[in-house]
Image (cartoon, rainbow, N blue to C red; front, side, top):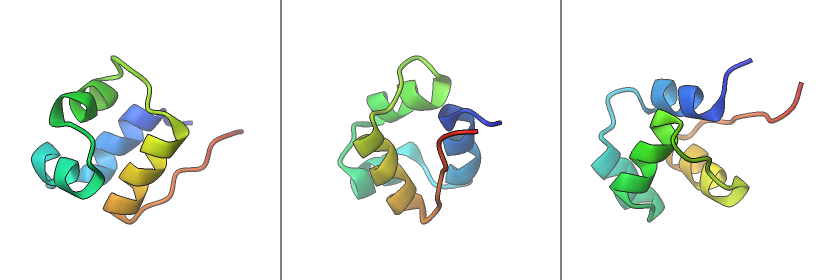
Length: 61
């Protein structure tokens, strides 16, 4: 099973953190922290990231 921060980095592909920040309203620094696993995204923030990347992430087993 993949952690959200691993999933986010893979799903982002070539999109810059700056572009993702523009699409989500989440700061570049916070997105960087999520992607490095330094902090965990809330469900709401994770949902916003997934919408911006046009992907889904399933929580659970």
